[in-house]
Amino acid sequence: MKDNILNKIIYRLRSKYSFLNFKSDLLSGFSVALLALPQSIAYALLLGLPAQAGIIAAISGSILTSSIGYSRYLVAGPTNATSLLLQVGTSQILYSHFSNVPDHLKSGVALQIISQIILFVGLMQILIGVLKLGKLTQFISRSVMMGYILGLAITIIITQSFHLFAIEKPQGVFSLIHQSSYLISHLHHLNPLTLLIGSIGLLTLVFLRKESKRIPRPLIMLILTALVASFLNQSISDKTPWSIPAISAPYFDLKGLFDFHLVFLDSAIIHDVLYIAFAIALLTIFELNSVVKLLSEKKGQATNTNRDIIGLGVSNIASSFFLGTLPSSGSATRSSFNYRNGAKSRLSGIFSGLFMIFILSAFHTWIQYIPKAGLAALLIVIAYEMIDFKLLKICLKTTKRDACVLAVTCLACLFLQLDIALFIGIALSLILYLRLAANTVVLEYAFTEEGHFRPIDTDHRRLDSRIRIINMEGNLFFGSIDSLQRELNLIINSNEVRSVILRFNNVHHLDASICHYLERLAINLSKKGKKLYLSEVLKPTAQIIYGSSVWRALGKSYLYEKDFNSPYSATKKAYDHALGELEEVKI
Image 1 (cartoon, rainbow, N blue to C red):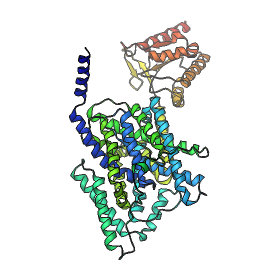
Image 2: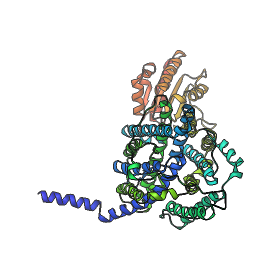
Image 3: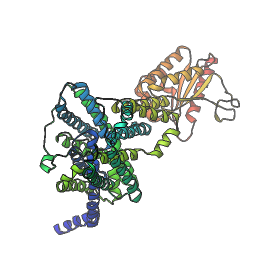
């Protein structure tokens, strides 16, 4: 008996996960590690942090998110967008609260701020996942994110141009427009050697992209630029005033890499920290949802984004205790690379993190030879590839509303802080959506002599002008009251009108504001000797009305629920009821 159960378990494991699957996950994990290491180092450069800041986030994100999460192909770690948002938020806090701190101490303060932000990002992600709010980002339109990504891409390209030209960035927090102006005015100070290295890096990445999407382009490019930079530094260093700056590498070993630090929470900056953390958490969830949805659709697989978000939160909390790391998010480039390389399960993400530790322990001393211009070239290419030009075209040409949201969000990124720009875009999108949703379609209908039910026009007159049938379609909520009242008043304020039938055609929702409006409308009409009828009311909507005080003012006999066997039989019953009451009054 026990042998049979054991054989069944072994059979199921073999049928679900074979040695070939294990081999595919192992090879894909190794390929992803070769891509993730240079990318994570580049993202650390973006913040001016030591290389290990990006490496820790990549290792923690890959191993923990894949262990806890659900998606087979998701590989988490630092991304361009979240890294830049963290950099902007940290700079703002430093500038606002620690401007008097000596320069040699600011780097330590910045690391503490970053650790606090990452800790709260992780806590927010876990809370969102536990509360099953993973689809929170469905309220962020594609136009907002396209405008934000476009603004991010422009920001990254301009900020990395300082490294490409070896020009010192201006101190303090400045808008992108100011930085662009500063860069252009100081172009005469550019370093031709770093520009050469950066150009070689850009051309290499473009060329390799055309060759194969399964090649770890960043690694090959960085090795090539490191070799060229080393040769140039040795051969012409005495003949020119220029040199090619590389990463100022401390000695990388596993002990130093994973030094554990407690996160110190500073109550003086907690408000700003929470604000930045929420913006980053929101962005990471959007990135994760986009990646998981894209890859799951290709294979037709089920998703559990809330579980993936919890895994992401755990990885961020864990990495926050290693001073000065980056936020982990769903990486589109590494996840897609994992998918293209034939990953079969979540083990591929775990293997990629383990391979990163192995590669780092074996080749950590080589990091000091990576030129900053090469990393800048990598970030510029990643920023360009972030832009979905097909979606950009759709957003610009579909509606003026989408184009407006995209343009405002992008311009906000250029003139304001990135976190503020994101919330401006979200707020504008929601305002325009609510304005659109609040426009309830109100159209008068009437029964013809032949018994047909038609909208009022020149060919279809009312059989009885004392009874008005008003068809309503759309979402009825607090935002639609003004437009609804305006449209209804044009019809029902006539002196000859004695009965008003509101036809709730396809109205699936009522809120407290609409219920209050209907109650006041029934009372006001009653004071004028008029009657209000509600017809074609869906069962759930009728329950809402019965549960409120509307039916007391209306009268239960004046509400007619929808009959799905006939499209307008409930309206016909309400019309006959109104006609009968008018005939009684006449008698």
